[in-house]
Length: 309
Ligand SMILES: Cc1cc2nc3c(=O)[nH]c(=O)nc-3n(C[C@H](O)[C@H](O)[C@H](O)COP(=O)(O)OP(=O)(O)OC[C@H]3O[C@@H](n4cnc5c(N)ncnc54)[C@H](O)[C@@H]3O)c2cc1C
Image 1: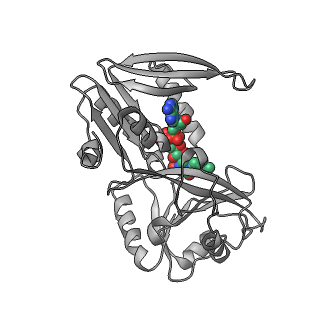
Image 2: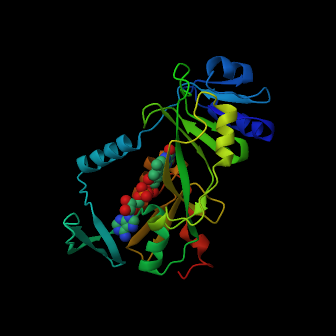
Image 3: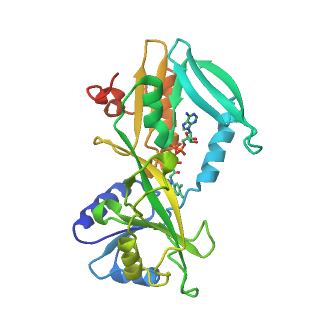
């Protein structure tokens, strides 16, 4: 459910118009009174409206990942875990060099160097994409890894419970959002989109802890059935890109006519939900097939003046 007041109501209308194109989507615009009737766990004043998508749901990352991996194996793919990529030679054929680390538990790491050759390589290294591109190709991509705090709030009023739906407050580009109690029993996931630059390898060693005042005030105001302080805080990494195509990108670095090195970054947040589509596009690109979508706005060449490519 999207909630909005003031200027963000424009975004609510845009979302409703978009949903109206899909007959299978069961949605309804409701006012603050109807929000309160349907969701007494949420308290939004009369300046608020909401777009309630009744058949929306939650994707479980673990299930999505295992489904995709299962399908990959069914199609003949081989998964190699625990392999650190250290070099990629463009070829052709492209050669990926790296090492498998073993026996970490016994504190006696045993390194086993391995290499794989291929016609195309797709790099999906999440927040490590920037350093990897720099180390391997000398590419300076304008990527900025960000840390976001993921907070879980205990349900105080057990009778009323926590909000039973996923919600996004459209204020300030969706600053606050939440999910029902699914991961930790009796706890609601409710987050603020506050992002702070961080190295993914040292994400939790911040000198100055981010302030929680904004989200605590928000929870006190709009979620009376929750404890007003987060019980569990985890760290999530996003990768921001310094251009207008923020949400997902398909970076292509063609080193010569027959070898392709493709980067996929920014799969966080929205990107996570559309990753099968992104994977399909990248798969086509890797095989040299035409892509259904226009991917030109996401081409690596848009950074050419800033990178060493
Ligand atoms: C607590 C928490 C809550 C979250 N909640 C949400 C949510 O509600 N919705 C949402 O969309 N997202 C959420 N996220 C973010 C989610 O984790 C990311 O969207 C998703 O994992 C991004 O996938 P990815 O494949 O792009 O990157 P990652 O999952 O970060 O995968 C990158 C992989 O690359 C590997 N790698 C890096 N360098 C190398 C190298 N040299 N050689 C080999 N491998 C390498 C890393 O080990 C890693 O496995 C959450 C994250 C956390 C931690």
